[in-house]
Image (cartoon, rainbow, N blue to C red; front, side):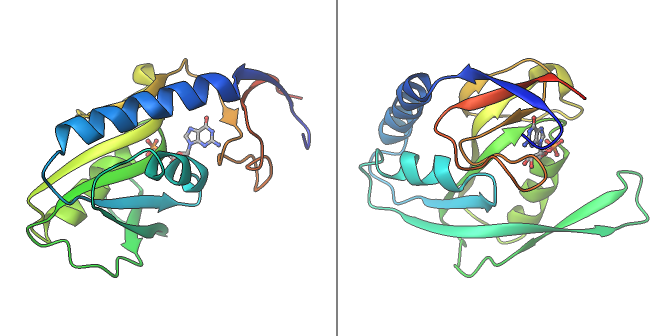
Length: 175
Ligand code: 5GP
């Protein structure tokens, strides 16, 4: 794709199995409550769609986007949560993310959302690169931990392309 070569690293079958496992954990842990799922666009749209159809709780879903702008703070790019059009005060929130890499995005999002006083916030990610984490982050739900390689597919992109595949691909050649 484009100038890179990719190979399948997580099959559609494995993704389906892991998404169902995580959904059943959420069904168990959130029994009796009405969580708000916050799907972080664009990368989590396919994961969120599959996950939601396995969730058997009364729940809502909203889609947010992170806008980057140059900050003066040491983390460099501060990202702002835009499009949150639902009142999360006193509600349990589950953030649905495509991939946690350094963890800076999720750490910043947690900080922003906490200002709106939700009753709880959990992170649910499709993928996690544990060796890249730069901040202490409690990722309660994770479909799969992966090595520090660039991945695309199943919602994740490379320069805008590759979101529309059923499998996840890992870069094997960087030229
Ligand atoms: P973090 O703040 O955790 O470093 O960055 C998370 C974001 O970086 C993800 O939401 C995703 O947009 C992007 N990202 C990190 N690793 C990858 C990767 O391997 N593939 C793709 N397509 N995006 C990635």
